[in-house]
Length: 401
Image (tube, rainbow, N blue to C red; front, side, top):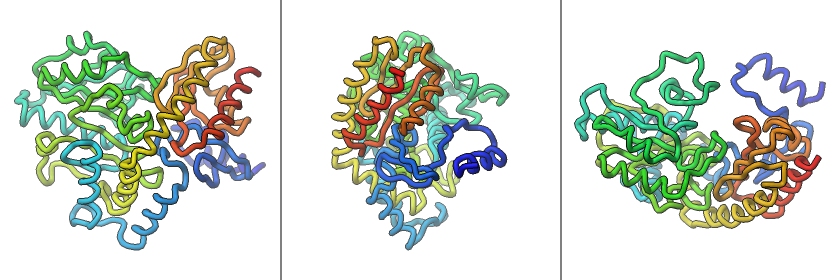
C-alpha cells in the first residue's frame, strides 16, 4: 500500500469513526498550502473551519508559541501567571467589552455562555429557579456536547444522545416574528450565529440582527452572538455582527483565537453579566493557560492593525464576484456568504458535495461539503489572489467536467 493508504487504514482500525475525512494525509503545511505524505501539494480552501484564518505555520504565531514554551505552559487557574491579565485586557478591548472568561474549545465557550445566561437570569433578571429559557435558531451549529446537541435540529448530530437537556426554544433562523412570539418573561437569552456556517454559510436577511438586538433590549434578554467561525476577520470585519452595526451583549469566540496553534476560546461580555460568577462556580484547568494566552495575544495584535479584515473584505469581494458568475449557469444553484467565506450549492445532477470535494481533491484543492450538495469555501486570510484564482479555476474545471 502507499503511505497514504497505510496511514488511513491504521486510522480506520484504531480511531472511532466520528469523522469521514477526505482521503488525504497531510504531513506539513505553510500559508495556504498543505503537503501530504506522498509529497503532493494542496491548496487549503477550508482553513480548519476558520481556525487557520492566519494560515498554516504563521511565523508570528509560531514564534510566540515557541517563546512561551521555553517559559511556562500551564499553571492552572490555581495561580496567576504573567500573560493572563494582558490577554483578558486586550481581548476585551478588541471586542469593546469589559470582561473575558477564557476556555479552550468552542463548545466549552458555548456551554459557558449558556451557564452565564442562566445564572444572570436567576441572579439579575429574577427568573424563577429552573425556569430559564434560551431561544436558538433552527439549523444552528454550536458544538457537540450533550447540552448543545439538545437544541440542534440536525438529526445526524442529535440522534441517539437523549435524554436531552431542556430549557431551549427553537425558532426559524432569520424570522423576527417567530422570535418575538417565542419570548416570555422567563427568556434569558437569544443565542444565534450571525452567519450560520455548518448550515451552508447562511447569511440572515438584512435587518435581522438589528431586529434581534432591538427585541432583546426591549425584553431584557441577553443577545449572545456565536462568532466562533464568523469572527476574528473571516467576513471582512472583526465580527460579522459589525456588518449590520450590531453589538451583542456577549461574544462567543474560538477557532481563530488560537491561530491554529492551540485551542483557545472565550466568552466576552460586560462586567454586569460576567460578574455573576464567584470563585469556584465555573472553571477550567487549561482555560487561559500561559501558552494559549501568548498565542492569542499575538492573534489580537494582528487583528488590531485591521489588515486582515481589509484583506478578507477585498479578496472576499473578488471571491463572490467569481462565484457569482458560476451561479445560474446550471452547475451552481446558489452562492452565499460574506468576506472570504462562501457556501456554494452544487446542482445535484453534478454530484453530492462529498463527490465534488473529492474531485477537487484530485485537482489539488481541499474544501469540505455540508448538507448534501453544498461545499464551503473559507481560505486562510493570507491567501494570495493568484492562489485563490488558481483554486477557482480548478473549481470551474470540476464543474465543467
